[in-house]
Image (cartoon, rainbow, N blue to C red; front, side, top):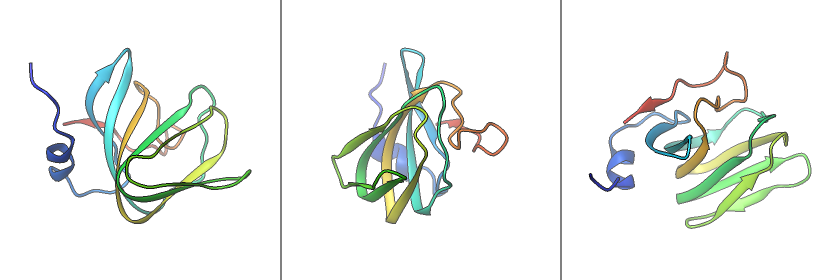
Length: 116
């Protein structure tokens, strides 16, 4: 058994907006992601969307108002709420969602999640 070093995992790739699975937790993917710029507006009809910022500044735009996150901040977007993450510069974040959940809310447009 080994601990998961999130910094080492993040150092192992350069792509933005492509979550990488680093562990599993009760049927959920635990992922790291690098983000920069704007992501697409989307929602997840069946699950909440968990964001924990490790480095950088992330704004989660929602129709009802924006949430600003910095290092150490977390926010859970409730299921069904349309949102768009925007990274101000490069952001490193930890994401948790049920295994197989598409990151865009739509399997046809979602990034393929790779285990690292």
